[in-house]
Length: 489
Image (cartoon, rainbow, N blue to C red):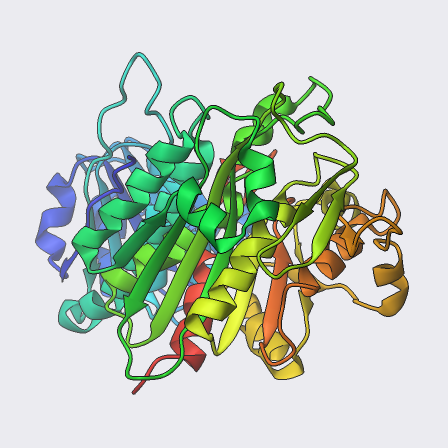
């Protein structure tokens, strides 16, 4: 598992700057006014910072970006970064500054002269998240990331805030690692074992095996696993940090590899289907964050872990199965498998926990990527207040999301004369008909949100806080939702 950079906070000691090795960063606002630390660095470098600040390059520099000076005169550091940042930056600006530091510093020691800058915890979060690299399967192991020290005016006040931010970073990293793992490593059993390990943080973890699911009547879920040698698992993670309130339920699709089953996918790009457990990965990351920061809330995470493979025993197009709810499903496309898993897990979550609200996350449809690309997840909701709360939390964390409609016209597309419902309505409105399918398995009294993260869980290019590949999208938004709406004072 990926180890994050160790980040600590200390009182400003300007006398140490000349001998500090590695990378040193200083923040300068747009007006060029220097802090005491910046003035000391300017003297050490014989006016280099003043020349940077007075340049056209600095004037045109975006907030959070840096001008980097290599081997600065008068200092032992290899790099001096002059970062454009106001004294009171917005959250995204502070995180961007941290990301800039991590990107330019690479693996070298990091020293940040933050002094009285606000939102230092967000700078730390940016440093932690942008420094992530998944190298578990590289023959040549990279050296661990060197530590970072952030010099600030009130480290005793910053440290508790940063502890929460770094708990979020741990959760995001956990999600990224799970999503990046190949399917021959992250088997259904291994995935379940990694979630069982959360017991060490105080999470109650229960694993339901295939025999347990058969007794519960989860024919929809089990129809996906029948063609694989790897057994299906339903892992339930409970964080009981609140009082007697009903929990928020988070449900994740955990398809560790998706061939499409008998409706097999084209070979081009199939290797990316190791990320089809992204929804379950997000749920796992949220649960880890809540446990690390000792959230005063009740949250239950349920993930359906399965592999979708073609085999002589595999489900065929045209087969009809029965869900835990009792609805019969005609499976017209075995590549529309995630909704079959979620249907039974959603019903189990409601029957078992009577949740105050329920959110499911899944890399569910390619149609979502066609509609929204890689900048926004699609979401659906049956409750306006719940929708507003979620959307506000996602916006606050900079995790793009866009609401799509539900409606009877879309539900008509998944009707069939042979069963209660079919699992695909074809290409038209594919993301919406998938949501309509899931909606059948949500009780009228349960506030529910479905989030299709197909485009944002694993991306083809670098993002503000992540590189190419797994992003951990959703951990921050859902943690914020819990903090703002479900925690006790």
